[in-house]
Length: 430
Image 1 (tube, rainbow, N blue to C red):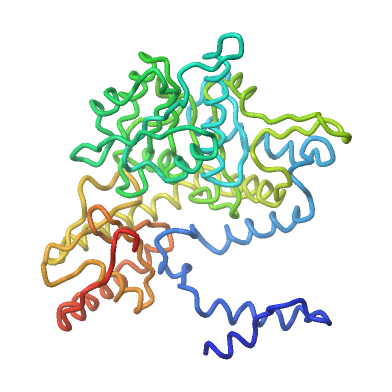
Image 2 (image 1 turned 60 degrees about the horizontal axis):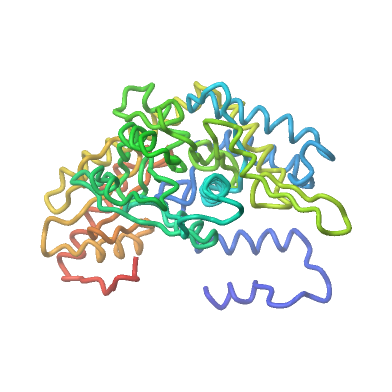
């Protein structure tokens, strides 16, 4: 198989171009080595609702595959129309005040980067006297469970991240947050939910803390943004977390996750649009003229904008409620059925999101050996290091295969137990 695959690869530019028909066959062959995300075998990376939505996603993207987001509003007014609509829908969904603003980015990492960059530049402006910056390096206080993209942003922007302890429910510990704040702190960073454990940080309390200390509060809703509002409508125990919470300054939410658009689509939203003066980049010191961008990217795929606009309009509130109902039904069913297995236990609390993790309660079942075994059976697994656990993200594709997955877990347990399998790993393995 590997020799056949290697023979299909292209290691240097061919002298004569390869016809599309042959390339299409090669691409299909390459995909045979991938885990089957349409059948719920992947817990993250892909977010699949149904074929109809994917067709809208793809056709809208293709319709604007040649345009460039850098030219929105100038060469391509159509992109401005769509962006304005996307912002309006997003701001309404996340309970933004009347004077709020938004920007479109390539994903959660860029959305977080832009929020951090905007907060930093505002802080540098407000904390300077005669051009001299005070109390640097500046820092951000975040929970131990905050997404690593925060540290990436801080690294690029010359900031420090102070990660604080979590409480017994895997949320940011409020006392630890308050203790970590000092005269160099510019931002508190909260998760809705956090990615390791799927629980929400105490955002209303953090909002009050941010107000008291006059700090920026960013809420990372990149995972939960486009599912939490609908889960709450359906009666699931979703805490308050969005721009409607006093003290929240900015929020990030990925449309290409549970908004079901093509990859490359996220939002960063601001409770007060005036701070976006610190978000943009502008440069005129070259022959061509002024170069200005609202976010990090220059040339950007217009297809991502068109796909986000089309999918949001196509699904509407009813479509998102249906997708969320299927996702949360699969989540609660998986949690219940895993907890029924004597060897396994889901971490608590759970059910606030479509993310959870489960540990081994049986010394003869090494949880990472179990993950390895499941992957040999075609189920790609998320892995958690603290504690050692299998992490499960859920989307609508998992609902039809809940029983198949539980059957696979049972078979994997028997295999690991029967052969005494142990995984070999260190702190960098997962």
